[in-house]
Amino acid sequence: MDDRMALSDELVLTQPVESAAARRRGRRWRAVGYLAMLLAVLVIGLPVYWTVIAAFKTTEEIYGPPTWFPQTPTFANFPAAWNAAPFGRFYLNSFITTLGGMGLEVFFAVTSAYALAFLRFPRKDLVFLLLLAALMVPVEITIVPNYLTIARLGWINTYAGIIIPGAAIAYGTFLLRQAFLALPYEVIEAARVDGAGHLRILVSIVIPMAQPAIVTMALLSLVAKWNDFLWPLIVTNTANMRTLPVGIYWLSESEGAINWGVVMAGSLFLIIPVIIVFLFVQRYIVEGIAAGAVKG
Image 1 (cartoon, rainbow, N blue to C red):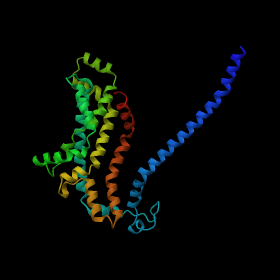
Image 2: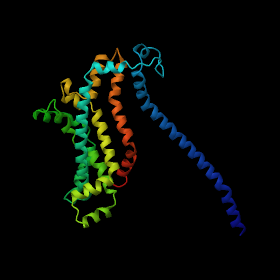
Image 3: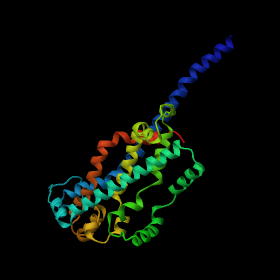
Image 4: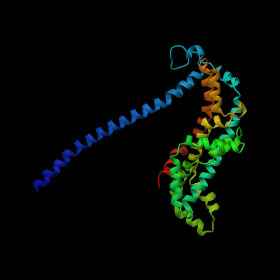
């Protein structure tokens, strides 16, 4: 009895000491985590911040001693950038290629993910394995064969030439397949019992229930298409078919080493639309990516 009491007292005495040590370790790791996040924000955010403040600085201030805020803020760089290049045409081309490319990517990703998640066909696992293998292939490797194909089709300097080669991506199918597999299968089975076909199940049940994942995939596609630089640069050769990223490059070539304020103002023309879209749909992003990571 005395031995049990001594053991109990020892446990009572030692438990608070271990808990305090665990709390100290937890605080240290939490501090390390916050420090890592702070460094990530600085590495990512400082160039963006410099771009924003440089757009509101005069040329003399940009080439003077560094300052954290514009000492004499000016909006003159924005009309100067707009008039230095056909940004109206660049915007039109970017909207057409981005919305067209994103729409095709979402369509192909939704339909192929539904097939991989809910349909039965031979070698389905092999098809999914090939899909995963496609994720490992760098996009740059496909540029030459894509360019030769587009040239033979006569699509150089056309919207089809910009959009079609990137109309489907393996990542979108993979993300949505994982999200579809996480849906409650009982609901889909109930729809089948009620006589719903695959198209009805996809449109009325799967898409509404997987909306966060689909919106996330659409946003990732939109950002990739909007910021795409290399392929539009290769497949177009006239100013009236250039997109915004190529237009910013053209502006930097003509203004760069002399007038950074104008170039940074032009860069904001590219950044601001994506930020506005992100603010409207950001609540779906974490939920959508988490849904895609739930089930393998």
